[in-house]
Each structure stands twice: as C-alpha cells, then as structure tokens.
Length: 545
View 1 (cartoon, rainbow, N blue to C red):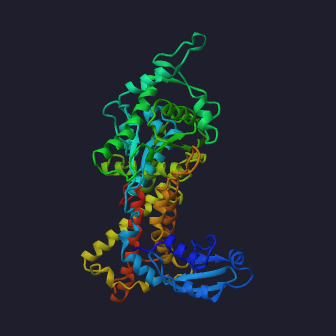
View 2 (view 1 turned 135 degrees about the vertical axis):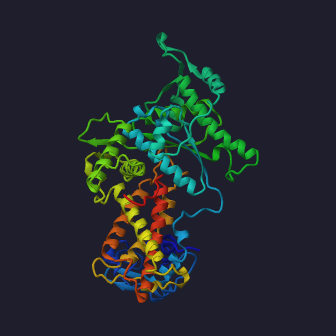
View 3 (view 1 turned 180 degrees about the horizontal axis):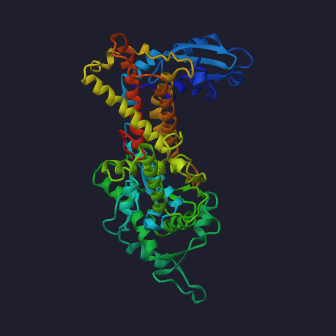
C-alpha cells in the first residue's frame, strides 16, 4: 500500500487522543530543515492544558504504524510545538520504488456515484461564447476528467450541435460529445400544456413559445431555504427549452435503462442516486434556476439532487468586455508565436511541428489562467505579452517549459548512455536513496522538498479535485478545480530551483553513478506526476519549447 499524507495525519491525530485535528504538514523549505509535521504549541495546550504532552503519547507517535502511515524517525517538543520528522531514506525508498502508485489517482474499489455535468454555454456557437462562459466550459471539462479518473460515471450534456463548436473545442483540447439525434419532447410538451397558466391581458407570445408555467409554488416549497431566487415566479416554455429538458431527462434515464439491462452501474442505480451539476456562468444562473424548477414541475422522475456550480465573472484589464472566446484564443496564439520568434531569432510558423507546439502553449496559457482561481471567485485577466513568458512562474507556459526541461534531461541521459558514457539504468530495488541529500545550503532539502510536497501528496490532491459534496444542503456547490493548476505551478517552481542548482548528469565517474541514478529516479517520479497533472487538463507533455 502506498504511503499517504492524509493517512499519516489521521494516525498522528488519533495518537493524541480524542479531539479535533491538531497536526499539519509542513511545506516551506526553511521548516523542512528540521521537521516534516508540527502540532502547534497552542493547540496542544488546548488539548492537554499547560502540562507537557505525556511521554507515553510521544512514545506512541514515534512507534506509529499502519496502512499508509509514513515511518517516523523522531518526535520532540520544541518552542513551536511538537515537531516530527520522518525516516526520510525509508520514505524515499517506499515512494520511488513504486512511482506508478503515486502518479495516479487512488481508484475506489467500487464504482463511484453518477453525475450529469450540464454546461449550458455549449448550446451556442463559438463566436457568441463570452469569457465567463469559456471559463464554465473549461471548469466542466476539467471536472469531468477528474471524476472519470476516480471511476465516477459521468454524462456530459449538452451534446454540441453548432457545426463550428466541435472544431473550437478540439482546438481548446476540451473533450465533449457532439450531437447525434434529438431527444423526444412529446411527453414533456403534453405535461407543459397541462400546466400552462392563462395568458394575461392577451399576452403576445414569442415565436416557438407554448405559454407560461407558474413556478411560485415550487419556489415557496423548496427554493427559499436552498438558494433559489425568490423573484422566480414563472417560466416561458418554448420548444428549445423543452429540448434542453428532454436531453437532461434522457441522460438520467439512460442510466436507469443500463441498470435494468444488467450493465455496469453504481450500486444505488436509479434517478434518485444521480446528481446533476449545472456548471454555469454567473450571468446564466437565473435562467438555469428556472430550468431546474421547470424540470421538477414537468417530470416526476427528475433527480432530487440538482446543484449549481456557478463560475464567477471574468474581467479583462485594459480591454473591452466584448472579447469573445475565439478572439481570446487568437490573441494568446499570436503572443506565443511572437515570444517564440524572439527566443529563437526566427519565425517558426512554417514548421508544422512548431505550429502544434504553439497550439499547445496557447491552450496551456488559457487553461492555467482560467483554472488557477477558485471557480466561484472573480477572475481578472491581464492580456499583456508577459502572461506567456517562460520566465513568469505563474503561467502555463512556465509549467510546459519545465516539462520540456525534464524531457531534455532524460533524452540527454539516453544519448550519453548510448555513447557509453553512463551505464544502463539499474533496477530500482538496487538504488541507494540515502544518497539523496542536498549539499547546497540555500535553499535546503531540494530533493526532499520535491518528494514531500509534490510526489507524496499527489494522489490526495487528485481526490480533492474530484470531490463533490453530494449531500451538502442548498442549491450551490463548490469544486476545487484550481488545485491541479496551482500544484503544477508550485511543482514547476520547486523543480526549476532544484534543476538550476544541482547538476543531475554529473561527470561519468563510477563513484558518482549511485547518486545520479537516485536523483534520476526522483525526477522520473516528478515527471510522471507532472504528466498526470497535465492530462487532467487535457494537455500533452512537450519535449521542447
């Protein structure tokens, strides 16, 4: 079983006895000089009074064992609190001896819940897609990838119908289905006609409208306490709106049919076990609330769990608010090409291989900009050329640059090995990971920093990304879709700092090979984690920039 940060924290907190969590994991290099976990002094005083932590408790902590619990070297009181250090060589050996287990999400033993992800922004055309809607599309795509990785059954709605949208989504590396046939609306139309309220003052209905359905009862019944807008009183029912409902209805019913046919499904298959998550921009939420209530009004089998993941507004510094998603992409693509021409001293736009790299870098820039902020928060975009620099440590371009540096490192080792300068890579079980220590004084623990902050906690981070609060009260939910981007940026910063200070491929002297191979195995783990994180964003690794 793999070691885990959460398993270790759980065991540490349990060792202190009844009460809330006290321990936390250190992340900063200056603290990792002396400790890996800390139980703060004030928290311990609240638990044990002014007395010191009992010796038996400290002794139990040092001897901690259990599934996923990292081995402890020492635990001692300090002015900051109870400081714990792991047996780092043993942790290096356990983690780097099983890299695949740490570079992939933890897959549950049983299938996860069933989720319909609905992104209304995809019903239009690309040229009408506002930046706030683009943000919702990218959040939905990233969330779908994270859920799929954790064996959650996901249906994506709507299937796109605009003939230009599939090409634009492919350009953005968004994986979304295209439409085949329309779902039947006859049953919903019959129910809607029966629910229509009489027209007031001979109200003229727009073309394609059937009439109005009163929603006030539903708002009063379930809306006020859960977050529905109290001003919702009626909904104008149109053929297009019924088509939207029919597609959502079909996505839910298909699961029930799969279950009745004995196909793979969640253990609690049925419409009540399904959760529908509407990923909407803040401008679309009011209309989506109408749609939710109308679905309940017209369909007795509508899922009880409908949640809104509302993406905050996107503001553009120094530019008009009318910038569309395709215009935004073309701007970033032009900036990437310009930056590459400046770096290489020539325009590489005629080289097909470089054009593909430019497309990947453009999408990476956009996705890291759109996804690095919590989705419910306002996002401020800066459109200056500096946003795509490989020297700016917050950008997607910087992450892809370090991905390419890793690829170059391993290609250099391969070439040197083929020339006879280095031996072939030995079995991982023969490597001496006690050689992984950073002899450079500032900043310290470069190798431990990479393992402890990047490789070891990665499966837990993926789990948090895919976590949806199914049973949380209220209409609105949050999702941690910013975690992967922030993690990859920090990983790239730590790797870049280490790579700039430590010469990985040293002189071809036999007495140096042991440390070199241990370092290469660590960077193999970093590379695999980086590739998995990029895959969660729909981005391929790059071998050069």
